[in-house]
Image (cartoon, rainbow, N blue to C red; front, side):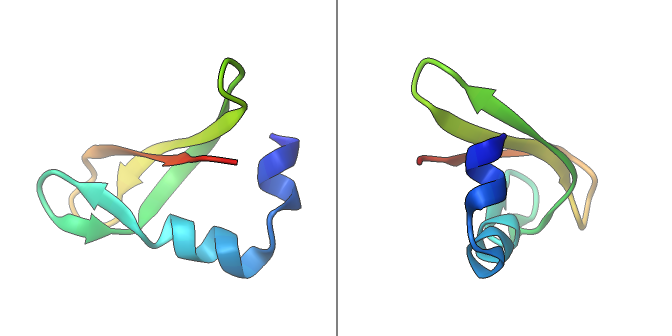
Length: 62
């Protein structure tokens, strides 16, 4: 979680607004939680598509 918090706001904004939805294509993730992938030390954003509400996720390699 700390890795996500340490990212500059403009980078976080770009990642949040660049998520793939299988229904809508490129979208924004909303109502997301930040999950640490401890094995790879990466972060996964898990939430919903802003447009259709389908579950989406974004891997952030740090």
